[in-house]
Image (tube, rainbow over all chains, first blue to last red; front, side, top):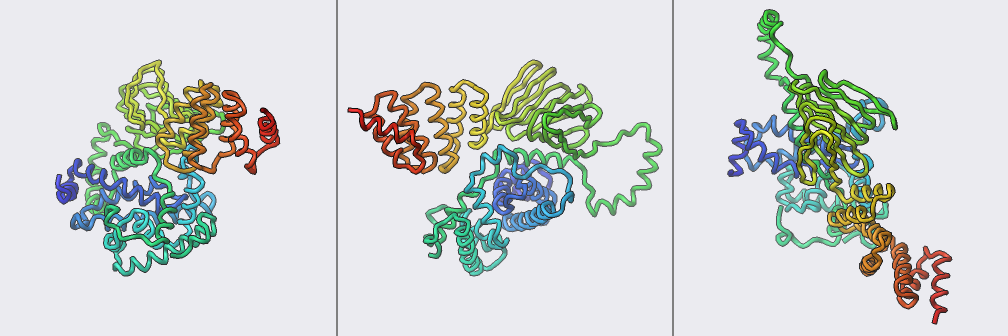
Length: 186
Length: 319
């Protein structure tokens, strides 16, 4: 099925086309939610919310080319909402009823090494814009032009923001003992 | 995304940052399956949108009148479910989540879905489920390792370090393990869906060893985890546990070969433990001449014990 047709047919209610969209984008959205959400956010719950918005509001996406940026925008807003909710749960006792532990329980703790946790905490300490640019540009290795489109900023902004974000990330990593002092700077 | 060859050359600082970012955890195994499940449940639950309210308000009076007239003939549609299942340690709790489904459980989980299609997301412990047949109830129980669908039967799902075990008392259940196996279990049958991640497989191996399971089963579990693990502390731990398990199983030649490979790879983690195992195996297999190099390396380690030094002295004195 032609990828442009997929979105059109999904908008028309074609469940097969909708499944194809889910198959293509769910892994990407899950990865974004895991990387951007940090250790206190349930990435599966966040990804579910993002995909529900896609299914229910895909008629507002006017062409296939706009879909990645639109979807990233939904993801960043959804992750922000989940992070706020996690903050409330952390600081306001009894604010929410019992919920599944986003850390995934004992089995998940085995799966995530100490270094992974430390890097996650390091990234989590950075401002949202820094995290987004590091994940899209360095982690997923998207070109500057694609990152600019996803974030809705000029290419020059991507480059300057990346340098600042990268340096902050490495400095924070050094304070956590993740990198040696000699690795700071270019 | 651009293929690696199309990327501009990375600055050194970019390489450092990227190396760190590569340590970020991936989404847990089975995440896509669980999200798809949750999406199916959410889409099956009617949700009034803003525009629908505008139309609905005009039709409410007519609908109310119609319902009043047809009340004896109309049955309510499925209602959404959201309920936590929590029991104290070692305690068993009973619950009826919908009239035709009764549970008794010791552990933690949650109930979602609808009254006609309840979905139990089970986290740990055992849940026993009884579903009255022929009531149109489509129930599923999912864990990180398995999904069990049933229409009218009695079964238990237990999730612990060993994986997810399904025991069917009566009726039939369809099970899909995340590892890819699918099967139908009938009354009296049991199967276990194994963990699918390196960390969980390490947990399973530890639990098996603690239970006194045959060493071969422990080794198989560890090798499955090794095949899945990426370079890093987790892979090192799996390999070291495998060396220990091989030695305990009496497979000394294999254990020594694996220890040699581990030491040659240069990982600093558990190095002293592996040197100790290699020294012991070499001593028992071929005596001091084979063990001397390991004993010397061990004696030079900051974690060497007086016993390690004593064995080196003893071997060094041996002609």
